[in-house]
Image (cartoon, rainbow, N blue to C red; front, side, top):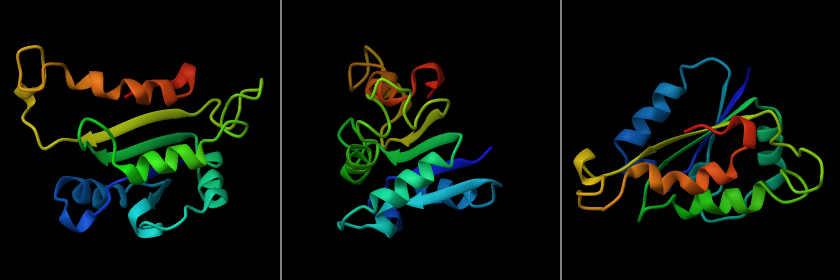
Length: 143
């Protein structure tokens, strides 16, 4: 089963953890890696190429650092432009995401104990991932 890994770190040269995760992913069989900052930078996303990559995969993995309680803009732009209504969902038919799993690999610069009702941030880290659950195919959502 093929997995497509969408790496949404805007600058892997400045990353320790996401860069290490990416390097390790390269050794895993049947993982097709799409590093958005290398493919597109601030330029236009090749929507057809990205839709082809998603269509050919059984599993979708989003990897990114958490910036201001959300994903970086390059990955948000990818979601907005690639997973469009009429292709991915919303046509009265299952759409291209049907039967696929979505997994999220994300990092923070914050300490574990900062997340929770009594921590610096005031809520569990899982609360920041709620939008990802909404984007996931219904029967296959996981994080």
